[in-house]
Length: 95
Image 1 (tube, rainbow, N blue to C red):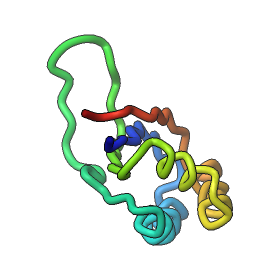
Image 2: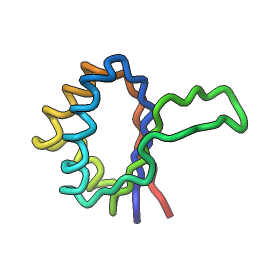
Image 3: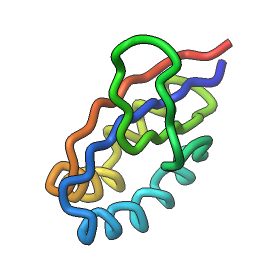
């Protein structure tokens, strides 16, 4: 069953965040993931959610998504994200 990682990113250092963007992609694909959404316009249709930079990743399974997130390849890249942005990230199982 596919799984999705939904991320709402508030970029605080746009210059250094570009380094994160360049390095993150290969780590996602190494674990069978792909980008569905990577930025772009977001509009709230209902509720009080405040979208920033929205990223949506698709993985073959929730297990693979968790392996990517906790992987040694992604760990140093994650540190760059933590230094350049604040994020909300959730894992959602699909159908």
